[in-house]
Length: 284
Image 1 (cartoon, helix red, strand yellow):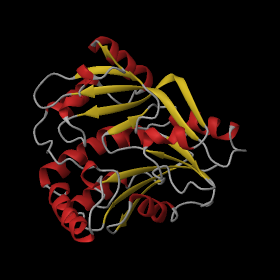
Image 2: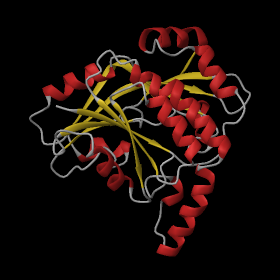
Image 3: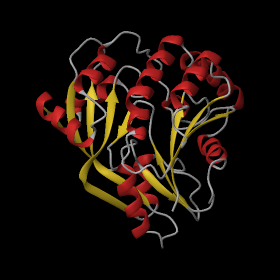
């Protein structure tokens, strides 16, 4: 079964952003797209997102122990040329990584269009989602492929690795770590595309387990997520107020990084999160 990952890099469209939730007229939606584009393509924000994509997302993709998969970056046709050129240079060394530009459209339509250009089997494959500031553990593809083969007889199913390491800093403060034990967070959430399911984005990541049979692997730490000012989430949802999060001391976090994410280091994460120019756009 083919596996394809999807990363929305400064994708301009109507999806699951907080800004687009709730009914809006066509004129209101158009005005919101223009407003969002100004935030989305802010130079400081793009510079920060390129850094997190390079050092977190892409590094975890390139470091997979099993490279039998494809990874598609879905971005906006309106992405500034200089940013696109930098993105292209970052991805050029990796033959299984593809960039696809799409116009303003619904997330599911955009992903379906982009993914269809790289797949051999468009009707039945495994998709996983990964933001440009998140990464997956080194055996993610190996283990996802094994699960997929065991569940292949099902028309559709969802997969989650239930433990996620979170690194958080909102500016100059020290990085805090926590281990979230909650399935179907966005980083690494996966689904088999089949009957009635067009994309892993067909449903919100928390809804996947309610919409189809699901498999939750509680063994590995499946993903690393960064929390920072640029996230599409309010500060009030920080680790100190999250009941599913267990605080992790720095030394233990470093051990987790060495064991599950050998391509990351605490120093690199600290530099990313506490450096200047993160931007404040509340978009994906």
